[in-house]
Length: 217
Image 1: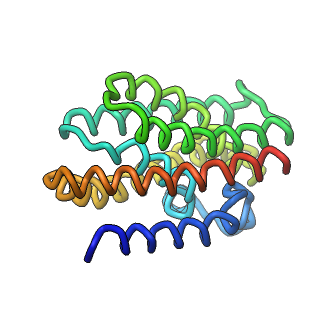
Image 2: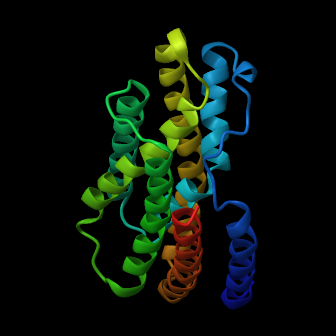
Image 3: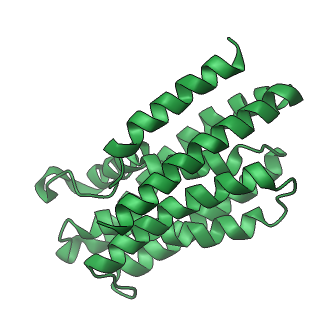
């Protein structure tokens, strides 16, 4: 398949996906639907796999490629950061009202837009691990907004641990699928350059749309 028709397909998918996923962290499952530690793990997996903004951010971060060690560093930075703010928010050490949550979601969308623009205009990305950590802190607030919507009460600790574990399991599954595909593309420099450019344009458009939609409520 030629890269340009494929890119058009990706662009169409993102444009169709964008309006549907503009508000990605609205609670969709009633609290009673989560049963025990395994249920929280499953809910974490479900949320990360359905969380278009988190997955697109990871895609934007990993799109430019790099060594396995570098990819591991980037993913670890993101994981540590969002686990930190998820825990602090769930424990009540960081609080967000409705307005704060809306702006956190807008910032998550902005993180996709920024990474996409970096892919387009920067040739070197040596600072990306630190930047991924900073943006990961904001993504953790998005995870926390979902977890906090359940009214956890005395079940806070198992819910927090199980949900976060589920998020990491789902994230690891996505990365395990995505990285080999990107590395295959990376072996063909001309194709890789086109994929990075066209995908980043699509990501920037979706990130901008989400950012504006979430900021205005």
